[in-house]
Image 1 (cartoon, rainbow, N blue to C red):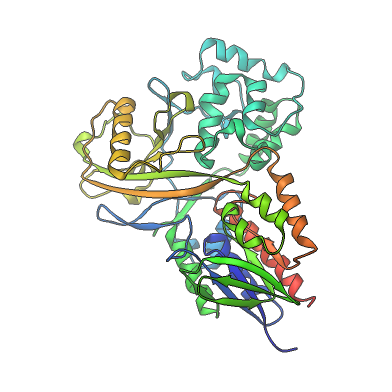
Image 2 (cartoon, rainbow, N blue to C red; image 1 turned 30 degrees about the vertical axis):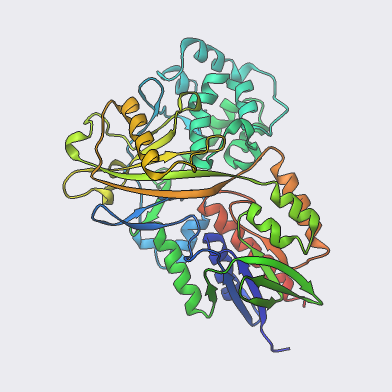
Length: 462
């Protein structure tokens, strides 16, 4: 009876490490926790490395949302709360035949006031008239595709030049084929007849406590979050095996056998914190239906190119934080971040600009191009967008294959079916991570906490 229960966590990203630590800290009974990560490092889609003389420049996500509590709480628990910084507040642009400032009074691109589109140079006079009809339209019933819903409410221009660039850049998505339910801030607006009026009320409620930053990041980059998390997990007795790809999970009597290419780990419960599509094969021995559903998940790939642009080449009028490119205007670049404008600690001593350029999304695959081609494509697009033929003094290319799970319409119904198919035959298997109930660091941390809680509850019944 005093034998500790064992939990295997599959995936060493933010969700896997957080769930492992939470089980160790919160379990009222003795537990052992083993994390299995297929890559040679932990962190998953979070990575920070030196660049252009700066000690820490992120290669993927550079911040997390602070207006929801989960990531901020985790940072505080890890002792990083005092080391968080926020973006400078520089404005952002949308490029559509020129740079246009993103209007204020938006909620993820949805106008919260008429002036959000009425005063914008992004929207044509006809587009403004169409958008102005929104408060007078009857309720829209079909709410599952973001693109379908926004087009019916506001017309094509608001969707293509505001909502899709903002939401699409966060999720690597084509919002015409992306679930509204996957973006809670937008889904909440569909419960009212008018999206514009609902967005206005939501913005007003959010502004009742002004002054707090929207985004935060450790001064040592997002990598500091997973690095500190990993260190804390090891200090508390957790075991992390990198370079271990899970091949199968089998139920043997009352426990599970998790097999990798070199080892087999016996355990009482499993937390799956790996991408859905990659998890399908090892779930097969437990449930063929769950495996079939997981294999249907789509994942988009992106490439992030970081460049150091000499100060003499940088256009002085571009004082914002970066720009987004609407899909009808895209060739290869989907977004560019002016890192040295966005983050005060990303400013090299020589005054040069740290520029991060994104290529690829759902429906626009770029992974088959070599690095030189990708850099040339990015430079050609930026010459079109900014009118400058940049010659970077340093370049770093970060490839993120199948890094953005795509929440297709009816995603959550498929997820519930998948979990239900496992619940009877394989109790004690729980899921967390970006493939399942939310993309972004806060959502992954929230899922990890929930999966850990469910796992602890299951262990206490054994």
